Length: 248
Ligand code: PEP
Image (cartoon, rainbow, N blue to C red; front, side):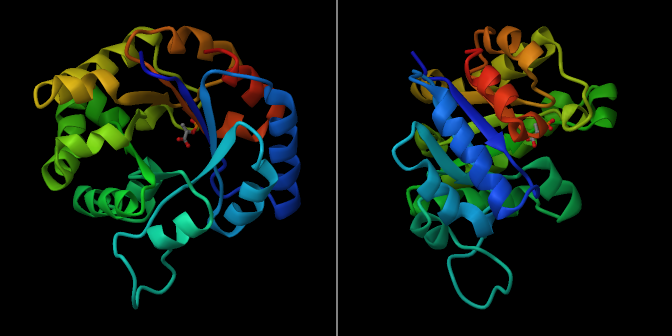
């Protein structure tokens, strides 16, 4: 039985004060849950938010990690630094990183490996654009994004990793994949992993991301291969995010 995971992605939003207020409200409102809850916060607030959440059921993650271990890489943040800040998770290959900052499948694979070297659980984000979906290339794109990491890190690395299926056309657009559309790709991803290792396929958590909201979360999370959600915009509203957390 896979544990569910609900992960908020605050992106580049809010101030220190906003983040602390949000984290406090979440910590107070979550109550006892069986699913894991995490928030991916801007680098500069990681330590603060981690401290605010200490003693709660919520853990912190980063929104990215460097593809190098250390050295002359101005502006980058290493996995060692993230571990220092108490990060449990790090997103790798988020579509906004891939499309605005040139993250390639090869660099995403390196980020994934760097995170794991420091016992940070990478959350590998994959997903197709609208154009790719409309030209029937969804599975091909997901294959390429997944295989680049499997080939570099090995399938067993996914015993300590999470996959997030995030159709790019659904991120921040208010358009959610239907439950069946999401389940179809989640099942496909699990089968692709199973072709290399059934054990890993059975245990790996696959999250859905793309305009998850309080009113659509329950149906999405009820699908057999959807193990929770990666939630962007809706994670900035404490009440809504708590509702999503309780939709599992
Ligand atoms: C995301 O940032 O990963 C995301 C899914 O955003 P949103 O929920 O706003 O679509």
